[in-house]
Length: 136
Image (cartoon, rainbow, N blue to C red):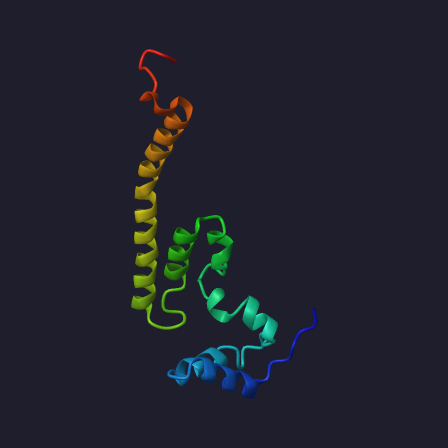
């Protein structure tokens, strides 16, 4: 895949259009690369933007979270990158939202398992009222 050269004017225009109510954030995102000598191709901004590799370990968050479920992975992502793109408190609230969603999901698992067992018992024994406790 050929690299598309970085065009600052186009990028500023696009970011301002996307972040119309927050041009300072658009500027901050653009100036992160300026003067660093890093690759500023569009491909690099998509695949490895600065906030992806800003963690002191240098490890990208996806390397860790791709081994987790959706909710926990997103929670870790928001904690990992808290404050890198904006308000850290908002990022932590988002992380808490995903943690709470996972707690709710996991708390439903025993109920679903109980219902599945009841339905399996019904499918096996029909309307006979379930199996006899003395039968295997």
